[in-house]
Amino acid sequence: MDTGDTAWVLASAALVLLMTPGLALFYGGMVRAKSVLNMMMMSFGALAVVGVLWVLWGYSIAFGDDLVGGLVGDPLQFAGLNGLIGVHDGTTPGHAAGEAEHLVGTVPAVVFAGFQGTFAMVTVALVSGAIADRARFGAWLVFAGLWMTLVYAPVAHWSFAFDGLVAEEGGWLAGLGVVDFAGGTVVEINSGAAGLALALVLGRRLGFGRDPMRPHNLPLVMLGAGLLWFGWFGFNAGSALGANGVAAVAWINTMVAGATAVFGWLLVERLRDGHATSLGAASGAVAGLVAVTPACSALNPVGAMVLGLVAGALCAAAIGLKHRFGYDDSLDVVGVHLVGGLWGTIAIGLLATADAPAGVDGLLFGGGFGQLGKQLLAAVAVLGYSFVVTLALGLLLEKTIGFRIHPDDELAGIDQVEHAETAYDLATTGAGARMPGSRPAGTTSPTRTPTHDTEVTP
Image (cartoon, rainbow, N blue to C red; front, side, top):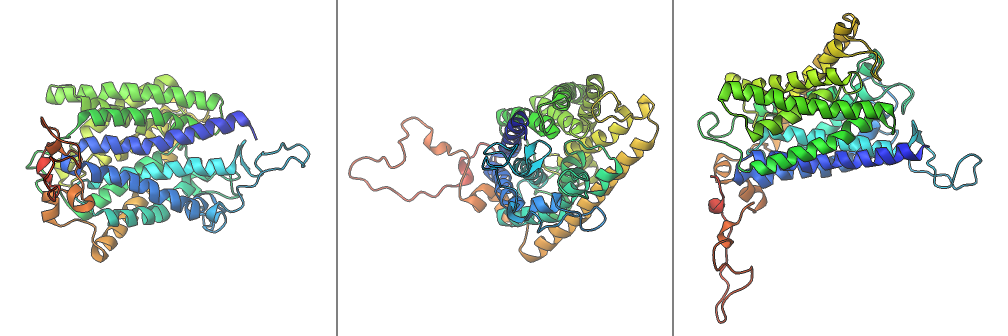
């Protein structure tokens, strides 16, 4: 066990955990005021559900011994993280007191399990952006647990479970030599394809394409994007599983890809709409971070800049697809995460250089079509699997317990209906407003039922 590596992965796990509340702010600011609490609760709900189920069986499905053809790990091998929490008592020669008995590389296995669990949390939360304003919260929690079990964990086994890393035999994409350093397939393509499937199952929001559905709080969006960018350094550089040169390359590539993607998105906005917006800057940064996630160990910094610039422009153009094809991807999960993830995964086959830690050359560096073919195969396989299984899960929940809220409730405001709360109680902000419970002597306190009439944006 290396204490420096362990400290870095523990810190990285905390950074990635912060990404889910950051996503809650990012998504929450992008919806209308009557939906912001529900949108944020979907992220926190995913954090809670996945946090429990990952320990119970998710980690074992993702990293347990392969059961069949590199498709799924043994769900019982590490159930409840069984066998991973032992430490030496100081009596074993060569092992200090408190040193972990079970390691993944140079870090305790239980730290690795926790780090990977934070990936699962934010990936499930990402899907929620495609169905903002119209999903029942209870059905979403059920979906989150099923999707983590049947989609996320198996795909993580495909790409992240290398032979000998945790189990003797790992996933089929990892064994094939596909490069996905931190989750282009597992996180980005996976969540984007799932978001598209759920958007089709739940249908379009009332007034989609007719009524304005602008973000209600752009400062929240900018704050959320900043927290996501901050956490992404743990996401990518932490995936090196050590405080080493691989982490350093991943860190610098993550920074520059996000930065150039801002320019790519704003350029498209300026040419198309005549303005460079704060929402565009925030979205552009996220698009670049999405694209560099699989590629941060395979590119040099200039290649990462090119990757980010193209990602920003490509995703800015792709968000218009929902209007062209008529599906309602509320917060552009498809346009940013699916398209950005596809570009980042496939671009490894073009822009990778053997000088980088991954040690592979892409087509533009003389590597031929071999790596490009592997990356294309991985992208298509994950997209297809995630879309089909998510579509089936969404239809099952819609036909059984009901996934979409009633149209009247959608019009009234999902925050009030699902959570009996509103984000902005403006009735108490005027001159002379009293603190709750305060009233003139000799009067009674009337019963007051919160309504959505006080919201900033209808």
